[in-house]
Image (cartoon, rainbow, N blue to C red; front, side, top):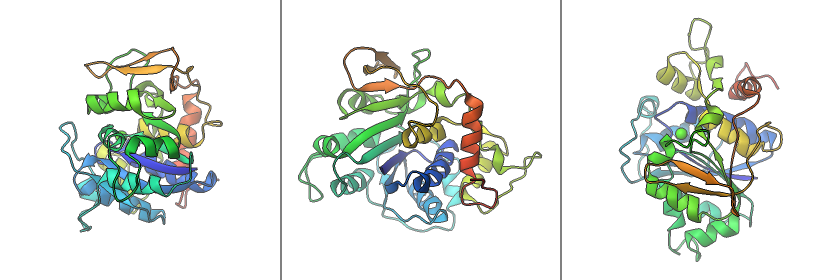
Length: 297
Ligand SMILES: [Ca+2]
């Protein structure tokens, strides 16, 4: 599969954790990463995404978010990219359009693990020099399926990624072509990962590892909820990750940012809370150590 991932890396460390899982699963699933786009504003997030990709020996286009995002606070991206100086990243929408334009039909798995501003921007993008198709048509032609971290389907209350841009989440829920699988808050909530980067005393075991450093700065040597790593696992190993999905239906975003699922004719599904969160913890923790001396196949 061809992967496009949109991330609000820099605030919560689980986006960095999702990258570790993604890079471990690329060779395992014989997949290719097409591009990374940042739904966290500024230049530190794309710098960090590029630096993490480099750690794993992967060089792909990285796009930035140009709009401001009130809900976003950078916790670790600027700190981890103090020595990086690249500026002038292309916009997320242009990077996504370019990647989709040259991808084979129905080959792209889109993973969204942040607010959905870039996704809505892509939906609304007009034909341009990159492709004669507008965003919606381009997606319709190139997507295999989409998995996003968003919503709280267990209790129908608002969730961070949706709330960060309610209007965008509504565009995505109502108009994004093809199937969307929502990985709600409750799926990663009981799955604590990232502790493998630390000794029992909380010391950083892999001081050169950018993902381990992100966990260290964000969580100070403790494991963290796995909203985004679980989403990547569900997207890239849908048949073997043990997660069970609802029937198809529609998702409506209300004015408070709650994502409400209704089982009527539609192309949206959501993932149920895991029956075996410990298995997911072990698997994600194992994948997080890929490309280090601690990795077990
Ligand atoms: Ca995220």
